[in-house]
Image (cartoon, rainbow, N blue to C red; front, side, top):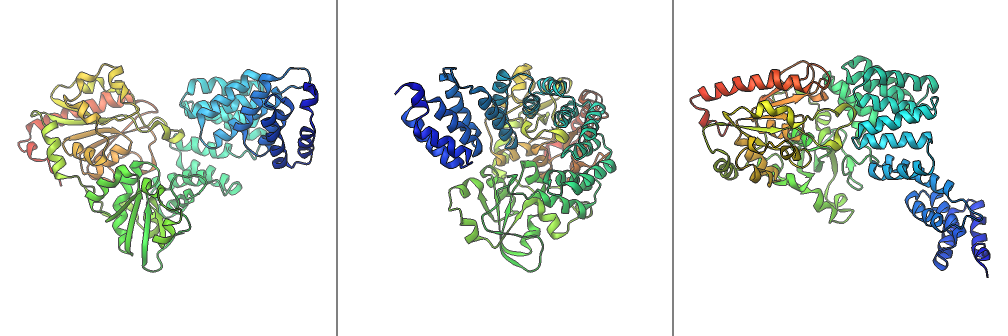
Length: 558
């Protein structure tokens, strides 16, 4: 049998017949068996790849189709259109599941095969944007619009790239152009709301979000954005209700327990309640203060969260029972079902018990550290009579998109602050961002025991380090909430439009009595804030510190 006859064997013919009948599972099984028997049969490889695509397995399809393309003799088959389509489908799936590196790889290869395809260019720009490569994202989103100026998806995506680059006027023009082309575009009106929120036009943002939600009531992301605006305006009841829409199993911002009832309102005392931490560490530090409210309505409350929080939570005494998410993964899938009557996301407690945060007395300190650990770090960090100033400049870059983009700042901007000689500076930056110390040759500016601080990743130990600092200066991050919840004097540096929890135009926040807020005067203008405000206020603060007779006795600040 020659190679052509082998490629068109009876099995291959049956496989293609199954494709014609759209019986994709049968086709896949036939082609897979044929490929096992003859790994160079390009007709079988092509059919196998296409059936995998139809069954929504684009990544496996890419591998199979790429193999077919490598061995194709070019006599009868052109694998490239199918492979290009598989790469495009793979990119789309990767974007939907936030696997941006995979999306970038798929798009790169698709562009090499077929340059100028508007969908690939646009998807590539979004993948690059979500990987914080704004300049390259701008290049490809512009190319996508040039390839097809009437393509509303490409036009809207270019608007998004302009938006995240801070070019707000241009972004608005492209969002409106997308709506001109497609009045029912699924994202453009919502994006106009986000744009309005980005520049502080909250009422306009609410209008856009509400219009969008009339057309797309299941858009959970938009409900959360609407909630943020309402909460920032202290419209607590409507804000909390909108925020409940984040509880979406497909989004996976929290670990939803298997077959356990979600507690939505208090009707009677519930025996066993599971409270689940969600989203970032800052959210946990901020909302854990409300756990005692749940203990009032339950005989047994258990908090589930990351293992690295366990010791700190137990020290603080806010919840007797704590189980780590890592331990849950080692248990039976039905473990939750057999141990709890209902569950609550941590950040839903205010809505469930009817809390208006600005109308209740918030404790100065509700998280606690270990006194033994405090004393250990006292010996390490209290090396002279100078004030210890904690510094933190960058949050998790994976969480900084659109409204949260720009909340971090480069360490280089603190050069004048770090040059102040009558203070010891302690870096609390861990992971991404910490490399800026060596990149800027700033090692000499920081505490002599900085390497010891860097080596410790335990939150309970970090709490003790913070207790040995007289002031903490930080960007809006989890560390800001930890420091504030410990009652430490904390300066939080905020972008021009900050997250909902910090409100607008105030230096104080009802959430944390020990916090002072420093706000940008204009978008992205960290330099002016640091040099003209933080630097001068720190110098004045240090003068007060040095003149205080009992500053050495304020270690255990209640």
